[in-house]
Image (tube, rainbow, N blue to C red):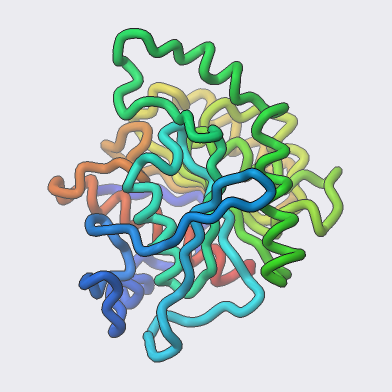
Length: 273
């Protein structure tokens, strides 16, 4: 597996110490929960369903990050996809309170978007910025006002990647926006959303992403440079769109890429949150 990093924070080897924790969670001692049963809870706040997962006990080796949270913004499969919940749990096991809002009001895309009868264009039109921004804004407000969070890192995968950028927007007040972001294979990202960022952002890209072709990858990198903000862009060879969430972990190369992207995010937030 070849990883091309355009703005490298540290060698990947420096991250390997994060691979295991001394405190078992759900019977799994690995910080990265690729399999198993999600351990978080589901709550409804302001008519929005939230998946909330907290760090293990203080006896664990994972560091605690008081007053800091991860806002987990899912792909189109939402909270119905176990891999999304397990990744949220993984960020909690890395020491962060993690909250994932239901961006689709209980009606995410089906596990197979090619199933007869599912209209992707209609689905995306029903869940555009007018519908999605208020859900995220309400979740940020809940984090800051009810959970006393002062620093927020947004994690966005695919559909959610666009919104990780949108909520770094300099037109938002500090209370309304997040403080740093990580995205993997972001989709539907517009130039203006990149240029408006007010904080640091890290991007994990798939080499074989049908939704983000090489030309667009280069454009995103050029736009990030224009912002003057700290950024990191990594390209994972041989990977398809969705690898950072839905990789086939029985395949060693795909598992390595998924876990490396997760560690990229953890390292980023360790520096900027």
